[in-house]
Image (cartoon, rainbow, N blue to C red):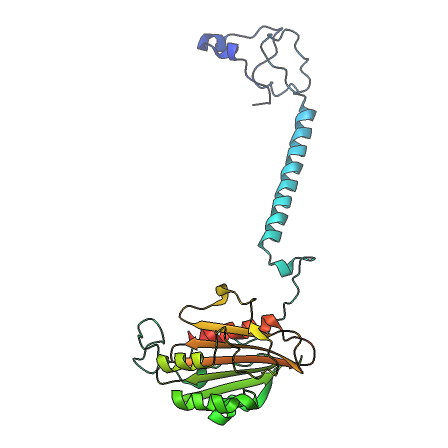
Length: 306
């Protein structure tokens, strides 16, 4: 059929459809093969209710513009979807600068002895059965390892080096009273001069670990923890949010406030069942140690203990 429309009056009854058309009425069916479609003159006797048909050239133009609009619409939608599906750093002009995090290797929990539970959940004693050395956070990329804190067992005397000389006698007595089973430690220095040290102290029970934490005045408003800082300006770090806490663990985060001495210190104690963790970052000079890498280190270490 051509683009001409059918007049509803011509199809009202079968008899009307079969009757020959008057000469003055334009044909309603397709033109005979020998008659060119454009050769038929426009009829002047068209019924009043028949809508005029647009010229073929207008139809072809409309079709071309419609196709073009669809093509541009598909292209635009595809482009928008492509941008929406990209990561922010893949879109030019929207790259996010690094926030100072360190490049740690992928972490995995160490194997447990056969039949031993993890420290929380179905473990009322909250005991860590994995090797304490395997629970130490590994050093990040670019770190220079500490030759004394290599990730193995350390003595009580080596652990006491984490504290200022005037505090070591008191801490030594606390350790004797609490009788820790093992102490493991790892340390490293980053290219920016930040020194990181992590100590894990395992006690015979959660009660001894908790008592050690209390005796160190950690979390107490009466004083600051006994750390390596040589000033009295170490305070609870308000930038540490409760959203960073891990279930079943209690972290107490401190930062040395200005004016500080020859080095700036950030430190945190974490009570994890029978194990007490001490994480220390310090950097010499007048620049503060990075808050983000410190909190990153603490969170990752806590995940290994959870």
